[in-house]
Amino acid sequence: MNRRSLLLTGALAAGALLAPAVASADEGVTAGTFVANNVWMMLAAGLVFIMHLGFAMVETGLTRAKNTTNILFKNTFIVCAGLITYYLMGFNLMYPGDFSLGSFFGFAGFGLDPGAEGNTPAYADGGYTYWTDFLFQAMFAATAATIVSGAVAERIKLKSFMVFTVLFVTFVYTIAGSWKWGGGWLDAMGFYDFAGSTLVHSVGGWGALIGAMLLGPRIGKYSKDGRMTPIPGSNMPSATVGVFLLWLGWFGFNGGSVLSADPELTSLVLVTTCLAAAAGGLGAMLTYSFVSSKPDLSMALNGILAGLVGITAGADVMTPFTAIIIGLVAGGIVVGSVIAFDKIKIDDPVGAISVHLTCGIWGTLAVGIFSTNPEHSFVTQLIGVLAYAAFTLICASAIFLTIKAVMGLRVEAEEEVDGLDYGEHGMHAYDLHVSGGSDYQPAAANAGSVPMRELATES
View 1 (cartoon, rainbow, N blue to C red):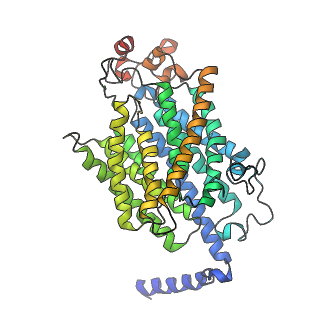
View 2: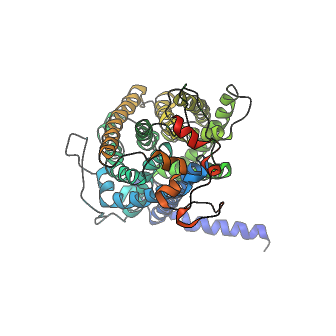
View 3: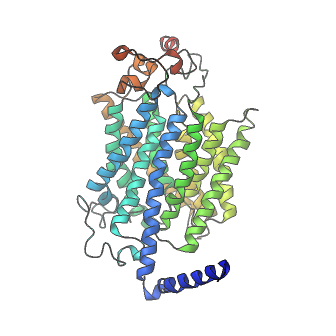
């Protein structure tokens, strides 16, 4: 038997084995379909998990080497704390089943309980098991705090950030998420956010904005006469790897949000997601060419992320062409947003606010413009955007201001100049200098391209 015959025989055998799984909706979900759905959702959870590595690489790459260990520690803590808090109460705050306060708040109890049917096809229409449901959603929860980490990098106290992360992920993200994904009042109104342009990215972005505003800019970022001094990142290869890891992870972030292995819808979502990402990168490159004759890699990378964030709200209700439009616009928006925030002296080392907040808003509103579902309304999308803005701004402000009063938010100027790796951790990420034991101080060259001690005395 030749190779072609073997392949044909194998395909026919596989088809015969899988045929029972392709049952109509009227017949219910077969065991084969249930297994296929659950395997895809577990894989999607793994892909979303990889995004946390991507965020860490982007953040370390776009900041200075003297803060690398601190940033990696924060990103590690976010995942660990996010999973545990989501297990303890976050999952049941986000998916309460019944709301006790007029579709605004509900709580199904502490811990996890799959019930009698939680791991059978009767759960979630056979899309996945209860355990997979928790794992997939838990990966999303930590992402919101990761967004904040980038915007407050290089000057926030580690313990203060850790306290903020626990409170923000446990209560703010989950209660806000229950309004749509948990079946709350915005879901009843018809607000649509497929995979989280607003529920994940804008919620994290609003928190990032408040944090950056309350902390103030890094030493040396803006001079007394208002001029902006660029503070270049330390590792552009790391930032590039991070963005491509995030792009890979978005296959799970958006593709998993189909909540089953539905072949047609999942493949459409992956196509619209990839096209928007590519268009976002091109949109940022094109827009920045009107700003400078020198192409900026960081802008191009943030353009890719902008396209991904922009398509996330409506990846399942867009055509490939409209996905490209959304990505192109997002790429242009992120460039303008980064420049605008610099003009008003809001220092965001990695562009997290512009990528996740600004483009999250655009993507959510774009559902009301381009959706193939005529029931999606621009007005309803706008109401959702404003509701999440008000709730998150109030909550994030309250948390940050309380922490500032009790613990303080910002490290001392000397510690910021020397680097948080040494000040917060007593170590450095790269073995680039000869250590002098306990008296070791980071070399001035590792403080960035600007003479930071001089700038500290001027600021």
